Image (cartoon, rainbow, N blue to C red; front, side, top):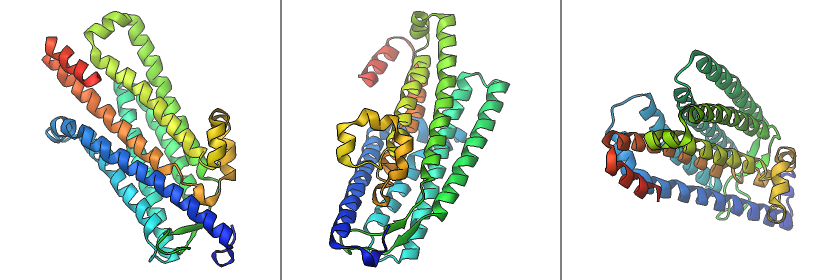
Length: 312
């Protein structure tokens, strides 16, 4: 990318336009985050806040509220026109590490759920621990290398945009690939376990006697596909809006290749939406499982009534 001082009027206008597009995506992320929090707050109070403290409660609260820190830093990075270049870089690095930490917390929640449905077997436990360690070591290394390859400048246009990235590294896509691989690994374990259970018990009988199982496997598998898709579209955010509109299927198939062509201005276009969706779905997994477990404890007609209202 050219230096800030050498940008012509057309290049400056393009940079501002892309920055505003990223800002719109960040505001959309804030909207999703706040709306979901409002919609599920009553469940959160009754099923989480009032429950005893344990590891899952701590993970839930971190997964639920850490994204508010993410989006706050992202908006400050986008709008603050008083920060020096070094401060912009430090803020971006902090945001990046909070993103990685938050994603790891969410994956731990999904891993615990997968571990539980496999009845905490020794092989499953070792497999999850080893795979998680390998994947997240790779994510951390990729993030370190990525941040070393980035640099920032002060605001190009005060009162219009804030911090300005002047240099980036294509290794960013490696982190997304590793996240998708781990989600695919968990999804495979969930599908295998779900099929074995429903084949053994009979799908109809399993559904009648254990609606909690349907929530665990049904919601879990669907959410994995949503999260997988969110990371896929994060890695395809380097294409122009016109290309993405005209050929979304082809773009999805070649997303890993085209990230290296991502303009620096659009590199993080869908990073925050992916982060928020990841956290929202993980929190809903916890709430749905706890809600259905409570319903099953009550049993009978009340279970069907509450579940039908919730499912509608």
